[in-house]
Image (tube, rainbow over all chains, first blue to last red; front, side, top):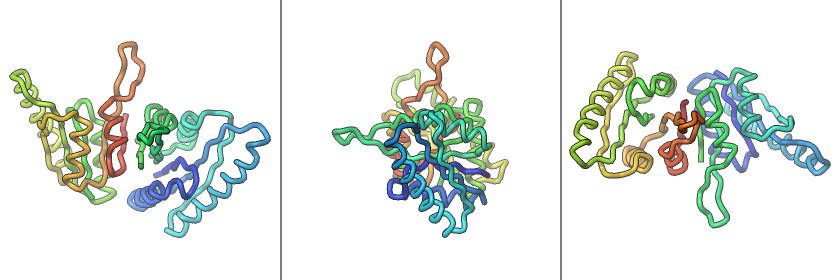
Length: 130
Length: 130
């Protein structure tokens, strides 16, 4: 069982990581933590470094729980939703876990466009966590 | 572990039931299959009977795999999404599994409004299956 976690940083996704650990343990699976970035431009270099550091923190979280984990930073010029689904297909992933928290300026809970794209396009079940 | 399956009939949700069995087995959980209907009106009486029969078929599917299962037909005057989320909270459900397949008249895959409501309002993780 391969579980892909769409990941934006350890503080954003505490519940996400908790659920991913529970699923990995129940299914005796391994976790792929994936951050997708469009890439290009000099401003992106700082973001890439941040993303790499965040992925390492995420990896540590899983390893401390005894869950096998690999990190992947995708910088391939794709929108995050499409990128995650394509990567999941390439790797033969069995389940994708994503966060769905997104708020409008007036505080209303909205559906993030990345989450929508992943749910509609994925070829495997998608677990959404708030 | 309590797993709620939002259910519209055994032929609509074959993959849904398959995934629900896998989750129930991995988490050693029990399944609640739930069909939500607005209710009211004489035309609904036939639909209620159909829904009850479909729920029994679903229950049989789970029982054949050795998964404990209860059925619930909700006719409480609520929209399906709200109804399912409220019921999940009442029962202390740990995970909701729903189908997300919905097509427009021109065949484009759309996000069903029930699925959207459940994903945004649920207090537990939601698994979407196509």
